[in-house]
Amino acid sequence: MPGHMVDVGLPARLKLTEVGPPLRPFLEEKLGSGEYTERMTAIQLLASIGEPQERVKHLLARELERAAGQKQEVGVLKCATMLSDFEPVLAHVSSAALDAPHQGTRQLAVSYLMVLRSDPDAPPELAERLAELMDTGDLKVRIEIAMNLINDDASKIHRVLLEGLNSDDEDTAIVAANHVARLRESGRITPETWTPEEIKQALDAHRNWLERQLEQPEETAGEDGVAEGE
Image (cartoon, rainbow, N blue to C red; front, top):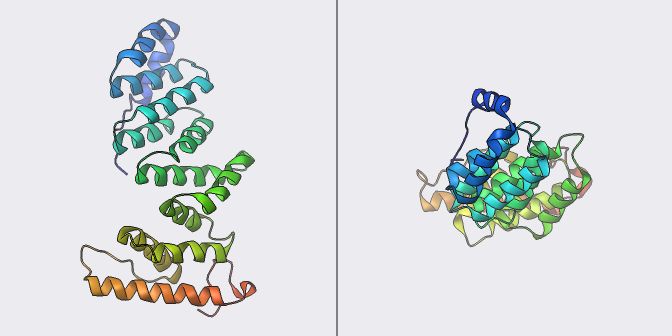
């Protein structure tokens, strides 16, 4: 996903680490008066010279709030992945990004959180937060979570995908349909080349398939969330 990436590069960060504390006043000034690129560079360099992790979390979360559009929001998230020992920072910033105004930012945040969730050392509240979002979050985000929880609760996944297919928003319906296509190992819908009738037929077929899955007893479903014999 494209974003306003700001990366001063590892060699430069390592070199500036040798300079250390004398850089701090200059970087602090850029945090207060610089534009987006300068502020993001300052945060990366502060992290490189030993700024406490809690403050780095705070600074990046603040940049999310100040971001002018989705590209800057995504840039903040991706910046977190460039830092050393980035997992706690990325978890914090991604959690904050779940409330971002742009759908693409929220979906990227979910993707990062799902990766972090698979870490044995992931905090338990991370899994709890994602489970909560499955019930209360934005529909596209819930679809994204559902497809990453494919071994957890097949019926819940199928219900979320069916809700997506029934959405009045065609883009949401297509996102859900392409996740169902992954379950069925069938072709994805490509709106650029498919006719409206072809899209409608595919949506109907996926909807019928999901409804059949939900009618079957839970114990007949395989580990991948697909009912045995389908």
